[in-house]
Image (cartoon, rainbow, N blue to C red; front, side, top):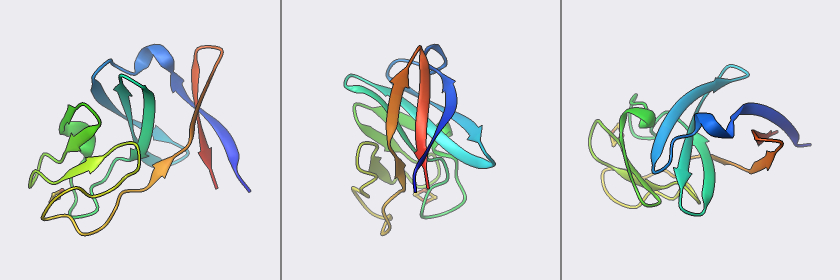
Length: 103
Ligand code: FES
């Protein structure tokens, strides 16, 4: 079953940028994009780098360590050296808050 968890204020998510937050012991990245807020795991699937230290361009986050890129909407790994997709979380906005669906 899915549980909606209050993760952050909408105002805490920067436009065209990424922020790292901890939610229920998980390291999560929130992205402010032109079609809304997206959420993924914050740790790269290739190595121990935090994506919130990377660079968001449009819907792609570039890992700071080896410049792998993920689509933040689907978690899809877009280029080498990435071989594994990133976990994403459903997002809903309510009352100025960002909720994430956890299993
Ligand atoms: Fe992210 Fe290598 S750790 S691309």
